[in-house]
Length: 233
Image (cartoon, rainbow, N blue to C red):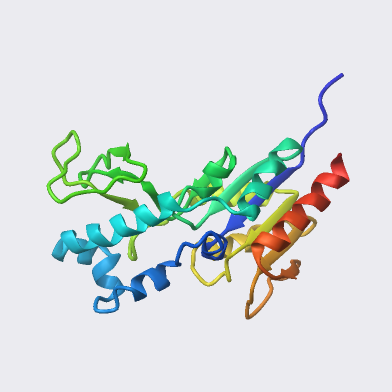
């Protein structure tokens, strides 16, 4: 007998989810560096002018991300793979989804756990929690930089992300108030007949067709996951 077709489920996650693991959002982290503008910390122009400053900022963020642990929401989301075809599309640059057990994760804003060269090939290296130092170069001889999408750079994996959302039977949005584009626009391509849920502490406007579950992700997401798993068990 053929195995039953598993429903496709997409999770769209944002910084509010990581914040419940103790990680500051980008704007909170930048606030600790309030003598600098975000253009100095997270843009190609800032990198060109003050690479040592940018490296210090991201080395600090990476160390904190590596020290953090997945929370109850991350772990609950990973258990969905028991019965669903799950894809996680995240704006977060930490690897807490993967460390919780999720196996298919698209990072549209890049990953702190990787460095890349600054030459045309953008050669990429896994560094986990290690720092990047000024003068540290890739195999092609170009300075390593964080593998992060900075302001003014193109968001990654968007075509694949749109296709996944369009095909999904269930869409769960967690930890994002849907204000950062183009990632926020992914909710607009969700199927009308999909089961669509939004969990965030607060939001100005709930997208059409979404059910709003307000509250901390660590409390709300496990409840949503249990209801979906219970329906197919």
